[in-house]
Image 1 (tube, rainbow, N blue to C red):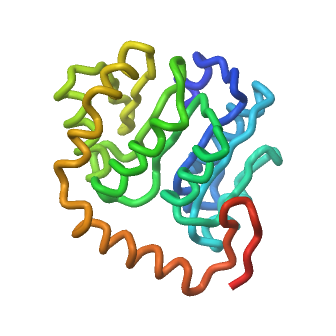
Image 2 (cartoon, helix red, strand yellow; image 1 turned 120 degrees about the vertical axis):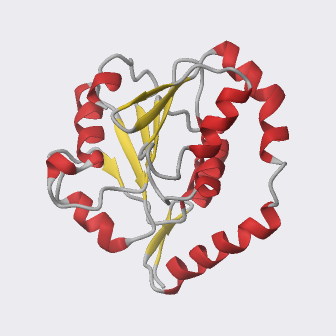
Length: 204
C-alpha cells in the first residue's frame, strides 16, 4: 500500500478502511500501514469494524493517534459517511470474504470518492474481488492487481462510465435473498457490541 499511497496526494486528508487489522503485529497490520501513510500527509484514517476485540488489537499496532475506529456494520457506516459528504482519497475494502458483501461496499464507496481517489480491495485470491473485477472488465475500466490486492484509480472518465452502467450491473442480483445473510451478520454484531453508530457512542 505504501507504493500506491506515496504516489497519491491526500488532498481530502482522509483514508477509509473497512475491517481493521486482526493482529497485534504492526508489520502484519494493514491499519498500521494506512496510519503511517496518513501521518506523512497530516491525514486521518477511519477504520470501520464491528468487533470491539479486533479494534483493540488494531489499536495496539499503531504509533500515531490519527485513526478513528467506529464499531459498526460497514455498510451502515459507509452510508453515514456519504450522508456527511465525506470524500476519501483512498478506500481500502478488507472486511467480509464475500463477493456480494464487498460489491455492496464498492457501491457505497463510489459515493465517497472523486477523480484522483483510489479504491483498493484486499485478498484478491479470495472471493472478495470476483464481482467487482467482473464489472470493471465488462465496461473496460483499467485496474491493477499487485501483491494480492486490486487497485482501481478513479478518473472523471470512469466515474462517467460508472454512472451509466453500475446500477444495471448491481441490480441483476437477487438482493432480497442475499440480504438475509447481511441481516444475520448485523444481528450478530448488535447482539453483544458496544459500538459507534452514526457518530454517537451507544452502549448495548
